[in-house]
Amino acid sequence: MNLTTLYWQATDYGVSVGIGMTGDFFAFSADRLSALLAVGRERFAGMPQAEFWTRYIEWAEYGRPLEVAECREWLARASQFKDPPLYILMATPGAPRDGDIAQLLAECRGQDTKRAHYIVSIIESAMPSNDQITQPPG
Image (tube, rainbow, N blue to C red; front, side):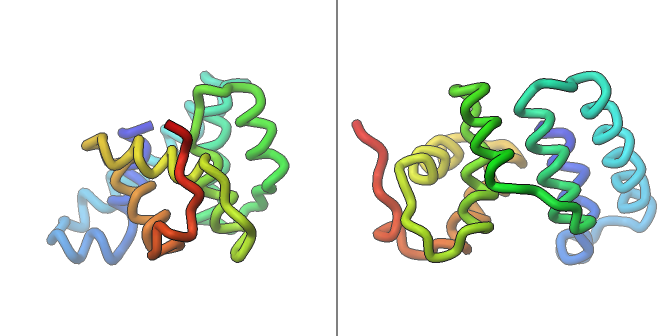
């Protein structure tokens, strides 16, 4: 998912301008992103990680529907997969938060990947005060 996230973020105009990316790399990234999403849908069908990120990117980029219930289903199917609360946080503003968001944030702060940096930036912008998040046990 890190490669997909890299190409996805490279297709963000603000990111590409901010880092001085060439138009050629921008176009290449857009092509690769489309190909990776198609491969993910086909090759990893049934895997919650691939399903979530494919659907999440399609929601964020193209406005395709994504439901909180789907995210909860992915969480139930793969308990070690912690990313769906990212969408749940944005889809349910003002709702009480549980330890899932705090756990995801803590996990991602400890990683140096494009996926982790993206998740941290979204959570921190959606919830600027960590006081709003119930900390995970432990």
